[in-house]
Length: 115
Image (tube, rainbow, N blue to C red; front, side, top):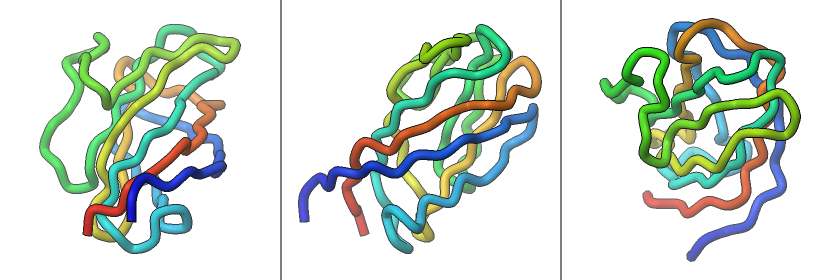
């Protein structure tokens, strides 16, 4: 089944509590590893942190947590690539460390179904 390419894109708004990002239209109702670019926003230097829905991990304050599941946003096509796993329904969770931010763009580059 291998890594599958994707051209799915969208826009998010994030707050200081975890919200769902349902990617089941891309990965199906499956647990999947997702590779996506996350960039741009209307607030410079906000950290966006992603995790598997239901996970207990979280960001360390407003700092970039490191690893492959968080990115610091800029104002104009600035951000990075995250790698994160969905739950078995194809859903992730995300949070803005340090306050609310809107206009966050994402582009799923590829995914691998795990189950």
